Image (cartoon, rainbow, N blue to C red; front, side, top):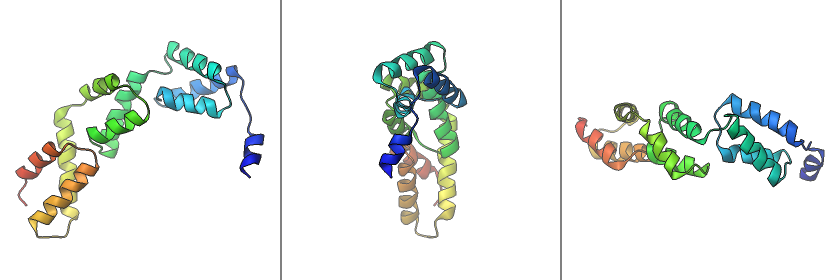
Length: 162
């Protein structure tokens, strides 16, 4: 069945792929790697892929810095991810370390701490235990899994009455 899918798959011309990639990038911010993978999936060869990406950058459809900032803000505000988890995800999308730093500078530290505090408060309410050690440990592990820094988690947990 997989072979049938491969044979029936329509391969796009460079011009068709350019137009399709423009609408793909206009829909939401994309990383260069996401677009590159999509173009290869549409059957383009390396030279056409790189030319298309260069055109998308020149026409401002594709901007890695804009993507990093939007991704960072979206994951923080919508998913409640911390900087560690966001950084790993951006690295997975092959965003440069320099652009990750630029995106992190856009984060309001007060907002960042407020988001973590809300996550901690919600988790504390969910845990059915009177033992403060168990509650602290579970909350700490949960916040750590969300990608927040341990020193920040501890500072917020220490300010709570458990």
